[in-house]
Amino acid sequence: MTLRPDCSKKSWRFFLWFWLADNRGMDKNSVSPQNQFHVCDAPSALQCQDCFVRAFEMIDLDSPQWAELQTAYGTASEVPAMLEELYAGRAEPLDDLFSYICHQGSIYTGSVAALPHLLKIAQAVQIEDLPEFKVDVLTLAGAICESAEFTPEFYTPYIKKAFFEEALVLTLATLREFSNSSCALYLLKAAAAFAGHPGLARVLDGFADEEFSTSCPTCKVDLYIWPALHGLTVAAEDPVVFPDTERLPVVAGEPAESTYHEAYQWVVQVLGKIPNQLSLKEGVKALFGKATCPACKHEFLLLDTLMNDSLA
Ligand SMILES: [Zn+2]
Image (cartoon, rainbow, N blue to C red; front, side):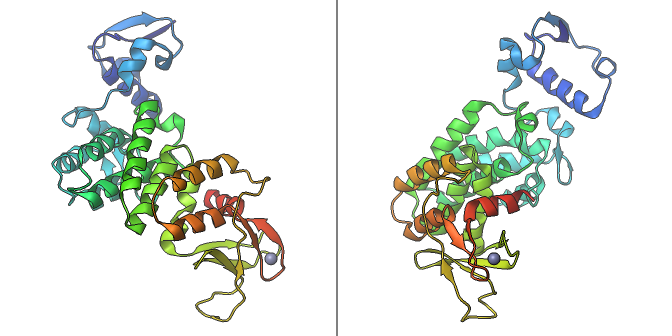
């Protein structure tokens, strides 16, 4: 049996406090004298239906809990004010909020607590009124979910499965409506993260940079993978410095031996439902293809190699 706060009285707050206490090595009995304990047979709050439902409620913007959460710059106390601005349809705080809660790919407890709010904000925006604002909010939510630090252990106290389902539905609907190519890329990245393909979401950054950098798995020479008219090409010398260097096309498609078979099936289905975006579609299919190193002529699976780099 486990002692935990009374499920019937705002126990999600206590659960969060407990989670924080666990993670900080605090003595639970010394900080919250007014706690009312009940006896629950479940070995963890996640297995008690009542605790479970309450543990995942969204943290109100006026909750003192934000001061217990973290961002890149300390506590998350300033996050609610920024979210409130976004709720009002004002995009100005987005850049700052990005720095606070998704700092160069690093995320914090405040980032994950902000996610349900970001989804609610994006759901409220009509795309015909503020299309880029909606895309930017979904992009921030996606960037949090594609972080290598976004593990179930980390997000479980704040995020339920329904979040991912709703975020994915909204992002795919927005993607089908929106024709701007850079927005389409960021929406595809966010959709991949919400659909459980965070590695693919990270690798897709190469399309924003117009270059994927890796090295040949065999001869280790640096490779420059660039978007081409149709798909991608591989060079073993920087084409900026050596414009005449050999650029071998990547053979698009899904090699049977790829580790990322499911991600390929998913992304092909998504791309098949969006209008236009031909170069993105060809580029993404090439990403799952076979590349040839111009230096040693060794063939390798491009995405598998890029994915290994993204985890290194
Ligand atoms: Zn090579």
